[in-house]
Image 1 (spheres, one colour):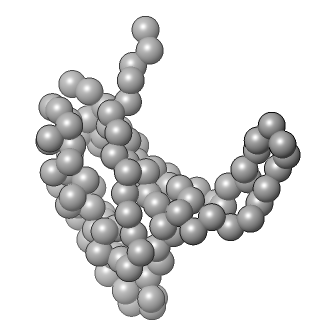
Image 2: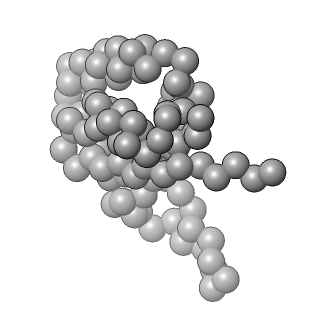
Length: 105
């Protein structure tokens, strides 16, 4: 079964501590519902440093990757259904990217 990665975009944040607590509860319930499909339930990231051949930038990127999770699914269609259930999408400005992970031999 292939592995998939969801990358969290948009740096969406709860508007209040109450909303944050509710979101964490929904997220935990969602992760639990996925059972053995979860490989990495979620890893938040700090703001990135952009490194190019021309130098280094730490300017804020409003669409920066804020974290990721890894899971397994039968195919892309099943993975999309899983991703659509992610409570992160309920927050204003939240977007996800979903991709199949290519296994290198």
